[in-house]
Structures are given as structure tokens and as C-alpha cells.
Image (cartoon, rainbow, N blue to C red; front, side, top):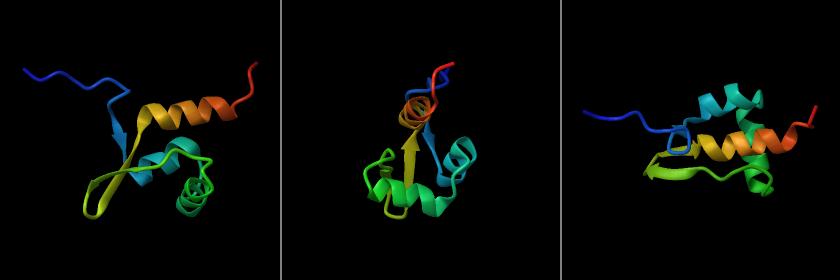
Length: 66
């Protein structure tokens, strides 16, 4: 029996990151290059993904408290 990974272990493709953040692909990569967005992880020779946990932390840091 396999268990579902928790949110800290899940990885997101660029399409999922753009949906979650409402930012374009080019904006995400520009922010990564500027050191203002989490870096993707290399999964294979031509595949990268972002940690869902790190992206959520970035979103929370950008969102002002109520």
C-alpha cells in the first residue's frame, strides 16, 4: 500500500506553478534569476520542478496579513 506524499514532498511543473501564482512562465524564470523566487530542482536531463512547499511559502510571504 502506498501513501500519498504530503504537501512538503510534492513537486510542481511550471504549468502548475503559473496557475498557483498567476505569474507567467517568463516572469517566474526572471524572478528565479533575480533570486526572488524559489529555484526549481533538476529531476532529469530535461525536467525541472518546484517544491510545492517552497512556492506556498513564497506566496504567503507576498500576501499581506489581514
